[in-house]
Length: 391
Image 1 (tube, rainbow, N blue to C red):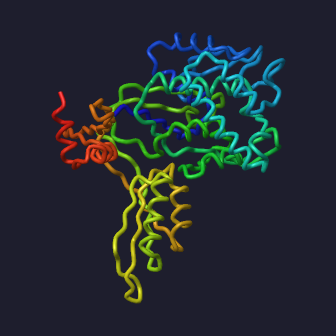
Image 2: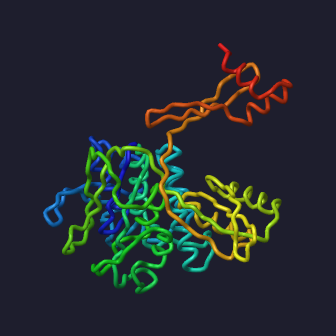
Image 3: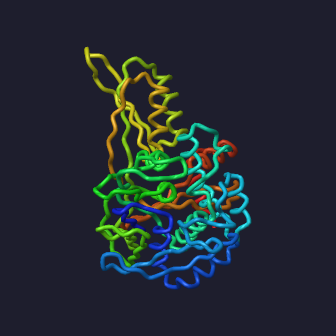
């Protein structure tokens, strides 16, 4: 499996992520030419080779008008931008729709965080640090680079956020800044001994949007390495390191959320299971158990991804009578899957093909077989036999 791993031991910022990913491309100049031709107003992007603590890497430089990223912007970009203004700019860029959706999704995460922190609707949010044209360039560059690289999964290390305080448009705030802290909910972070802001809202939002999981580096055969440099100098190399390579097999980090109940009817448990599937659970099942005071009860277990954890937890509390939920992190090995639609005399039939680990198998979708069986007045087995004999 083609895996992109981001080592964020020195935090994450949009320009650092962009620079590290750019180092993985064979033709960096062609990418810069593409970025500068997108149509971001008054923006020019350049790169510079710099060394931090003896490590050579790339610095991604965005110039708006006559100012560099992080400096006081003059005629352009110094005003606070609304989400509507940002959507207008993105919609006119020379990008394919998938990349535009990624850019807007990242900004939506930032807007949601700002809305929560300031207690105002998303429509009233006016971006400060992240709303300027240089930030649009950083986010767009990362989204476009991720699309170019085409990894099957993006994994991220625990993120160092820094410590102390940071000065921003609202005054002096603790590190991580409130919006950054909100974006990093549910993600492993640590402080470290370095004073200052190491993870920005832009960096946090990009990682949250693209990461398939947050974990230590998996076993992988590395094909390419990139170093994206930050502007500041510390006692440690201020950079993000990315590694692109192949992992041995496909593993998912999933959560098992379990609870025990002894006061729900079978109908109520069935209803709860349906709601859990609708809420994004990968699997839901029950086990009969013996509980305290010799009462018969039911163990309800839902398996979900980390991204669905809060939703599935909320549904377990809402639709069951439990007062507590147990959580276990586990990994599952899965076969790669693809859906093939077959055209038959009875209409389209979907077939799920699974492969990997030296195994390959196929299975027709039950709903399609059942539909044909009802229409033709025959058994599902007969439908399957007829489809397999076609052609």
